[in-house]
Amino acid sequence: MGYMNSQFRTVEPALIEQRKAFRHPVQIQRTAIRQHGKTAKKGELVDVSIYGCRVASDSMIAEGSRVWLRFEDSSPITATAIWCKDGHVGCRFDETLDQKLFRRLTLISE
Image 1 (spheres, rainbow, N blue to C red):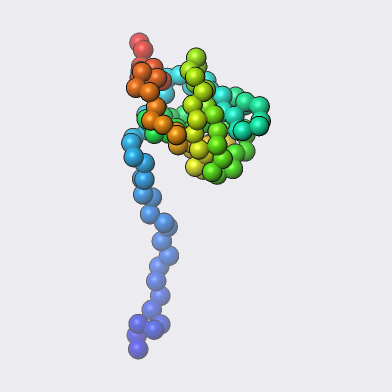
Image 2 (cartoon, one colour):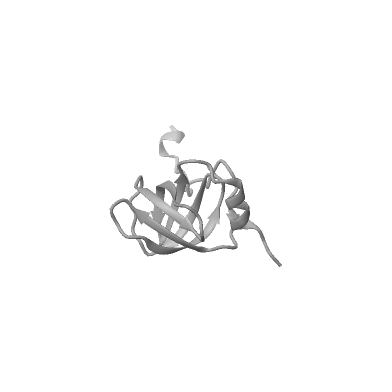
């Protein structure tokens, strides 16, 4: 039977966006990221939504780790590291980001 000897072409996995909200580029980039029991490390906020963010950092953070983030002059924000790859950490905030802080992080001033 012909179908037993059929060859299938290999394909790459589909790139499916699974975020709840679009991530916005940021204007305020300086941030600190800290794991429980460790000292804070400097990082750079790459993008943000009200549900999470991506931080560029030299820190190796395990997936599922609890982290605390501090953006310029903000109170600490608790989050969970969802992924860590190529010097970036994807974090999901425990609580939705405050609207005023979100605006301050993403507002373009000219």
